[in-house]
Length: 138
Image 1: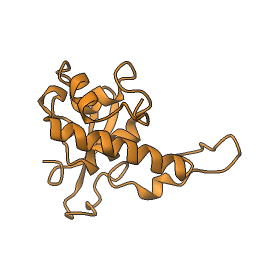
Image 2: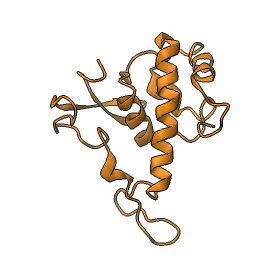
Image 3: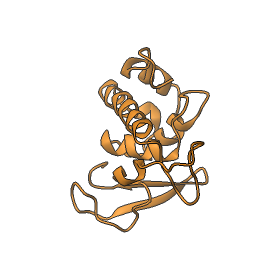
Image 4: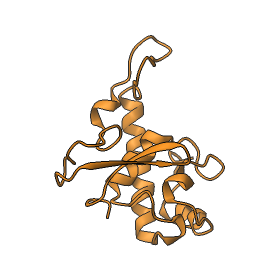
């Protein structure tokens, strides 16, 4: 569970060292990490400057420290802003979430990166869209 104290870079590193799938797929696998959906995976990887296509077992301990921290930050920001309202989703209270106004890459394919101005790319991974900046996430 990414929001628990036990979820840190060392724990993530130990989980990912056994996985040769792309890192985005690994952190979205609920049997490995709970609660990191497509949007939050894209955003955490962007903030961590990690290419979502790189194999999970290729990440260094430092990469995992940063990714664990950014997973926590992204999830907490999403919770604090009521989640992400895409299409017709609303919260149980009837309100809309506002985290989508903080997206750096998700859903922004073809737009300039707000860090380097390079075009945000979109690829499919396991049937899901992945958004990333080739420059910032090398």
